[in-house]
Amino acid sequence: MQTGLIERKGSVLTRSTLKCLSQVASINPTLGCVHRCAYCYARGYSMYPGDGKVLVYGNMPEKLRSELSRRRTLPAYVFFSPTCDVMQPIPQVLKVTYELMSILFERGVGVNLLTKGRIYPQFLPLFRQYKQLVHVQIGITTLNRDIQKKLEPFAATPQERIQNIKQLCEAGILPEIKLDPLIPGVTDTATNLQALFKALQPFGVNSAGINYLFLRPQIKRFLCKDLGSTPLLQEILKRYQDGTPLNLLAEKSRITALATHYRKPAYEQISSLAANSGIRAYVCGCKNPDITEEPLCGETWGQHFAKPLKQKPLICNGGNAR
Figure 1 (spheres, rainbow, N blue to C red):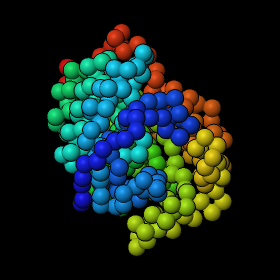
Figure 2: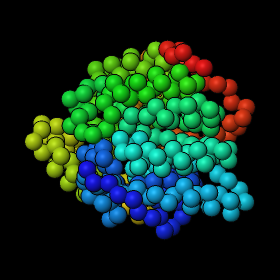
Figure 3: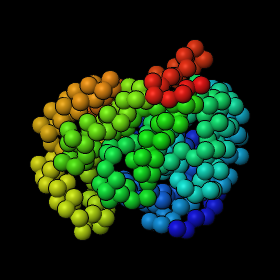
């Protein structure tokens, strides 16, 4: 693994080209991600430094302070982060991320964090102190370590992600689950999901965003490269032979989604399985515009930060919440 510090030239707070995040202030502290998920769309970006290389914007905290001081209105919250996971096991990444979050919290700006990594101990006291300004999404689609390791070779294990949930509950923060991306025929089976929902039940998790894998040429190439020697590849690709073309990136980028007649009943079944465990599963409307009018991700997250000071502490049934 190669790591290095670089300077951020442009603004720290940016807007994503994804429709669901177009109105959300976002931060990407790095170029590159050590997790190297086989389905990661960011690996196909022109600025991606290559597998095995992570570049950290070391000057971001200083630039963020400057940007916030010039703003008349601060964002309600900031999303970490569209193109990398900030909970990578790299000291420089964790240091910059901690500093950025601290700056935002001190100014009353919330943080929405999506991670498939391990939440490191230094973040837990910070999250506990500002728990009304914290919304965490844990990306997890299976408890099967063999499957997870093939798809997300260097991300946190399923058990480490369950531990994330436990620790967040103990800090008084109820996380949300992201079943994204679900892999057809692999992680969307009733057996797989029932086991996952059962494991989540003791913690009182009550919300889950669900979305299936979509394909672009770059994603397909990485899947073939990373899964070519496994039986998973053909299992996945055959499901997309009659796929549905959709636009996701501000109507400029075409992707191939699973056929509508596959996704729609599958989402209904998954939602039913989740409901049996007290979990409301909602479909990501931004990635499934052909089958749902549910709120976009940015709108859903925004509800969490609408009135943070009046929000009651989030208590988990299975944790010793404080």
